[in-house]
Length: 78
Image (tube, rainbow, N blue to C red; front, side, top):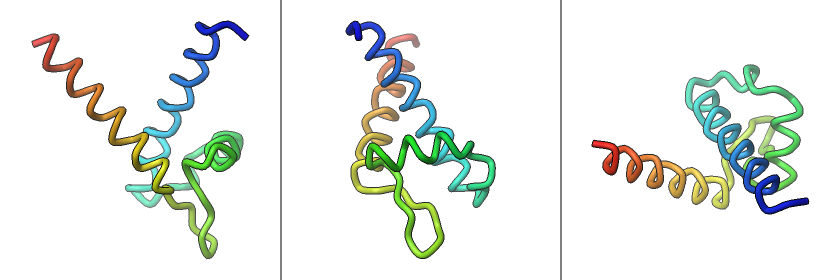
């Protein structure tokens, strides 16, 4: 797999994570596609806990990094 392909997959997963976190925040885990949940759980960004889907510390760190990058991009664009 090329570096570009790997980056594209990573970017896609990160976008999926942001969408999942948004859905979880709205208490709409049912809106997250099952295959997305499976992928995010397998890489350790989400976990099941007592029947609820939760963000892991690794997932939270990833979200913080992505939000910081988005904020930096917005500041540079302004």
